[in-house]
Amino acid sequence: MIQNNLIGKSVIVVEDDPKIRNLVKIYLKKEGYEVIEAVDGFEAKEKIEQLDPCVLLLDLMLPGISGEEICRWVREDLKSMMPIIMLSAKVSEKNRIHGFRLGADDYVVKPFSPAELMVRLEAVLRRTASRCGKLTFNGFTIKPAKGEAWINGEQLDITHFEFKILHSFMQNPNQVLSRERILDYIYQNNEKAVSDRTIDVHIKNLREKIKEKTPKEYIQTVRGMGYKFVGL
Image 1 (cartoon, helix red, strand yellow):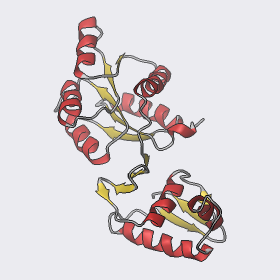
Image 2 (cartoon, one colour):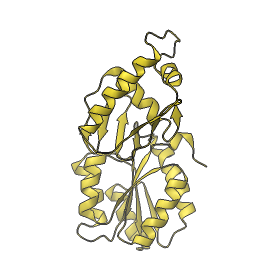
Image 3 (cartoon, one colour):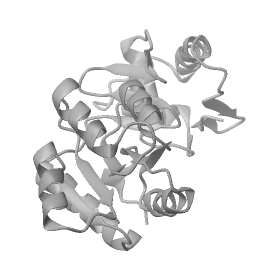
Image 4 (cartoon, helix red, strand yellow):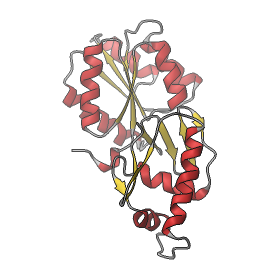
């Protein structure tokens, strides 16, 4: 069952073994996480910089750039406190201590139980008090505290009302939202200053701004019902 406090929380899985990567992805999606994949250190650095995920699951033995170097880069160059869980076949105490000294929040030895990894991930999030502070869905990221919206690393120039509409969509991905429900979200004090049809204008403008950044059709019109945020 998807946990509401995890919806939109993005996890990047950096693992060159496709079987392990796919298995972890299945479990993450089942728990409601948004999953980003990287097969080597170069792709990991690119996607971390571009998409700013909430959590890093990091294999240490990677082609190109090692997991140790990625961990050091995140902590020292990016100055990021993103939770990092290392995945490694290296079982010695020396290796685990080295991983923690590099800045890892947890160290999981291969082979591991995917179910246990999910529990460890939740524990790391609790310990670090990291709730990410953003919502992510199919390449779209919003940062409610800052009022910012991003698509694949590019910031959208949107109005306050457009941001509020987008926020309501991203809190309810793949669900049909009526105009009335969107209005209730925007005007939570019930002092609605605009009509239902004004919502259509805001959404039209939002769609046009999104299309400037990506060909994806994120917002679908459901005739007679409202709108749905899908990101096809």
